[in-house]
Length: 400
Image 1 (cartoon, rainbow, N blue to C red):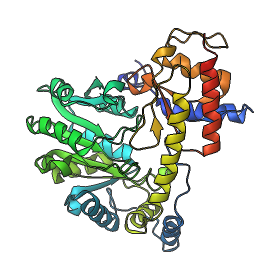
Image 2 (image 1 turned 90 degrees about the horizontal axis):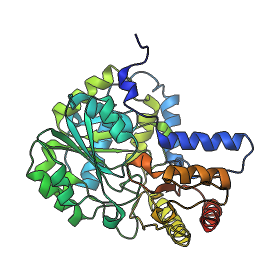
Image 3 (image 1 turned 30 degrees about the horizontal axis):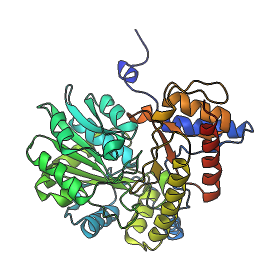
């Protein structure tokens, strides 16, 4: 009898975490490594949020809480979604989890049966298909290439829907591409979804506040109220508030789904960290004046990276609408040989050779379901980004 489960054989370790760990290991060994694989802001958590956590500790708010969130945080989430997204939920329609990842996972675990299909536009966040597999469902990846700026078209969505489709996972702005759907583009997708009442929508809005150039963020249930009763609107404090390690995610949706997700959580982690929940209350209710500064810095870095990568031989880098990633295409480099003698057979080979020959760590595109590309996180200083991009330019210039 095998010790490890068959379920484990269906999934892979997170490629983004693996790249980040590899970069740290090389740095610890004394190598000059620049890690561009991390999916988190380099800014510190704002002081008012940290102070709220300290007050919670001093007030003894260190015990178990309600499984899916304290009333104060649920109230703050209800107010946030009403204020910023125009959607009305009650506290019974809100859940809080240990990071956005757990919220998505709870929903999939609570709803998927064997044979149920989940449509996932590719490139996708690395965890989407594996979470579907862990929950017993079938991920249906739909490649959305550079020719559509990595966005799904209505025709692609229509073609992917079958009688077995249970969920459509929507992520805008996107990890890994930074691509954001305009209101018109999203309305075209929601028109398709209105014709298929058995399909639920899981909207991952984690990068909502990190948008550039006057881009207007919209979420599916906001642009099409007819989808309200079958949409789970997911978000969290990790990215916008530089709180990745605090592990607080949340969602609003139909009460019966929220209750089922709470049942899953009650038998896994129970409540999220009590202190982090009180910090999240302050994040959502407190001053938001740091957000424009965060956006300004990320937009400047985006422009720097897009410009420098497009100057690299064989690289084509679209200009994203949000998040803090770019997803360059390296089709022109496949089959070439690096200065170190590596034949670039695919984007994984490219990323490995880039790390070994220049010390720049990026995540290869096949991890996100669309190749040949790689993902760069520009959530680091301008000086580090300039150095990294110069190294990438040199690496590409040495191809033959």
